[in-house]
Image (cartoon, rainbow, N blue to C red; front, side, top):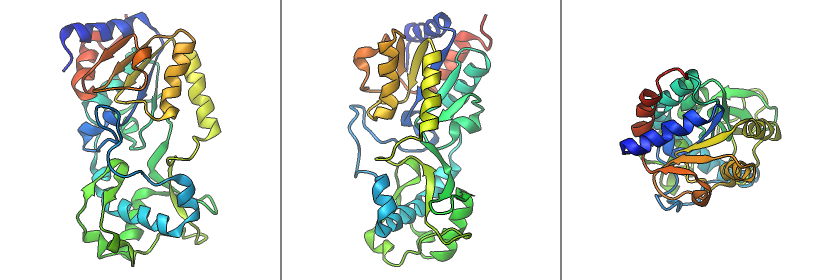
Length: 280
């Protein structure tokens, strides 16, 4: 937990800068029951995630993804914004932060009430057909999956990040993939997989927000993925101060003006109180 001095330093950081851009990561959502990817040293846990190019070209990879997602989805669907998400929405409403870019795909910032928000890697609550580009709600696709795979619907598995789950390989043998009801095409969650590029228009908007900000606050991210770390590089190159609220190592530790090693749900509600709800 941050001490009073650290909390005061964070509040003073917000006070000094009128346009603070927040960049959030997986550590933001652990208190909502969603596992993160890395340990406190920034080392990735478990097996590598599915890569985007593999998903596109390999039917077996798509089967693995959708089977694991079908089992893991229930946990993600139940997740609710935690005190950290709600506090960031309050800080935005009070004028203490100007905008928020999240690397998370869980949709919890949006549900918490954040308004000026870019979901850099997409939102896992949407699904898109790769062939006709039709869109569907992930909850609707879950219904198709459970109807086609009733045995797997009863399976128990260990939850993994972003609605993934660890299941036994033999559960995949008879698994029926979901298909687009309009064209019979391949379905993909509307997220940026590892190995894929963030859509150019979304990247451009995020970079514009960074250019318009006068400081950067990183919350719950080790910044080991370049799509997040690039914002710290840009801030440093343009002389904009960077603060981080994160347990453990970040890739940008040598660029930080201020670092508080604590969790978002512990510190951000106290930061709201320290700032008051309205900027003077």
